[in-house]
Length: 232
Image: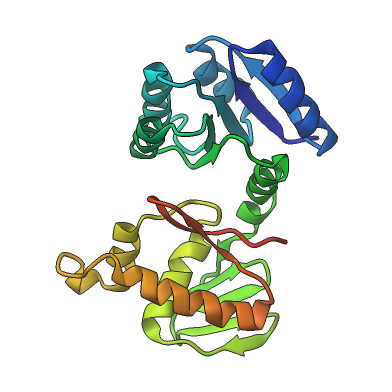
């Protein structure tokens, strides 16, 4: 069965274009035009994700995203918003509403497809064993010994980087804020730690992983944070 993607839009032409792109890429699509249809569609179909077509000045879309992310029945469904260029205020409001990903037009369709494929594949690979080992694709993290392996080869890293990587691996595809990462890596000093220090450690971790993996597996989302998103 093809993974289903709900497309919330009041523009039929938009749905025809993006629906075709997603169909060719192996996804099934369903158009949602009414504000109250999304919750019912999620309950009935358990979609992989929701794509929201955002128009400039559309405050209703922000309220809808906020509701989706605060409702117990819908908050686990990933939401991506497509916004017009120079939509600074809308962009920030969507981040505050909890949207999982934002794509600013114009953007290459491959970016959206990469995100969707990550939700369809990578997110299902994360699991933690009874012994405290976190397995994510070819990565294996051992909590008790603070050891990290990629394809059975150990990657040596300091404790802070290990904690940051573990937090990212446990929630693949999800954008984690600097504050969330600080609380993970420096729990006893979270209140006093400069969140910008996360950038330094993430840069070091990214460089270390790139040397072993051969590509970037940590994605930076401007003004929002970081996410584990390998290009596999």
